[in-house]
Image (cartoon, rainbow over all chains, first blue to last red):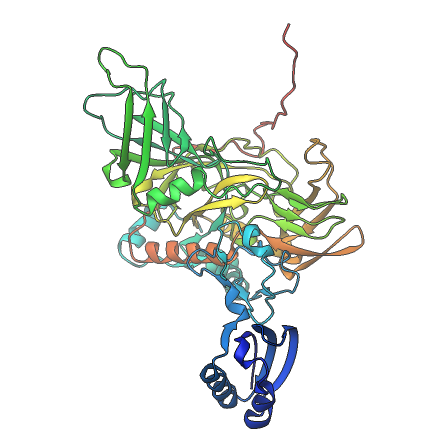
Length: 135
Length: 401
């Protein structure tokens, strides 16, 4: 079972196609639309959380790519430069969604990118500047 | 049971020294008892990895042809201004130095993306940096301008020299005001929104030798990934303070001035650091070995996070106004749990200091000692102790007459 937040960009020619319907029907994926803008004859985008079996998810993504939908993983918008992170923990209370967790045993800081909403608050709060915003 | 440094060094050279980190020693003593553990363990290693603002480096850059006298002139390395009050080819840079055109806090909070700390990191990483200098010109040093790339390997000497490191205990910073503040202790949210702390607790060097019985002037230490020495007691060294039953100060107390060859160090353990709204600094890795000379010394190293108390200070009012008020006392055990209770409120905590990296340093130092590559030193002079009547004076301003 996987659950990923991704951004789908639909070129205008695909906006009137029942793409999401096919994803649900043929690949047994469940959808949670978090943000969307779909206007006839214009490029559309949907920020969506897709959940399902890994195999179905992979086939669904393949189908989307084939039809011409551009896919971006939301969590890839904020990345941690592992070489710069010192695991100090200055970020943990800055993040509004609790995407940083300190392991009680090792005291290392985990970046849970599924929780990240790419708000960017951690970028300048990180003393060694290990958090990077990628568009 | 007592041992000498010479006996311990003999065992280190033979590859027989028994070494434990300050985290491991707690369980070892719990299991074996103080007496047996003291006879078996030779050295306890400590570590800390934290932003330490009073850090800097000095360099001898070699003489240009024709010669230029930097002393009394101006010099910049990657736009960061260097101190030019020494002789013709010597420069000094502190971790907080900022390029002249850095916007600082003109738009709050300033970002401070590049300063002296970052320059030191770049040099240690072996990167070329831009040296730009101007001078007034003399008969023996005629040149007035210099622009060149320079690398740490080109320099005759590059020396890390930190006037104040490894603070023995530190404040826990909170914000009682109604707006977010930006401090050297990180971002502090309004109305006790968070509490930030900054030492490695039970791993931190001076918590494990609270009366400086083994750490003194001349002690060899792990510094920035290389070898360093305690040069002197650090600035603001203030050992004559209230202590807990186990001898650990309950407020900031002793400090160390450290020195070492920057060329041997590593950018992994000297990290240029930007404190939002505050400034540029350097995160420094330090590890101090404590020779187990007696049961008493071993006992001090078994200090745990629950034993160490830190003062909670309001950085929105009391700290800037230099009021001595302490809002509460909390233990490092509580701080590490993620939540502390202050004024009846459950406050989430965060660390400015990396415990996991401190542990890594203690482990590296342990391995170096076990492998025979790091010998211990007898201090040449003690640090001023808890009975030294030293005092930490504030600045009393006096008007010009």
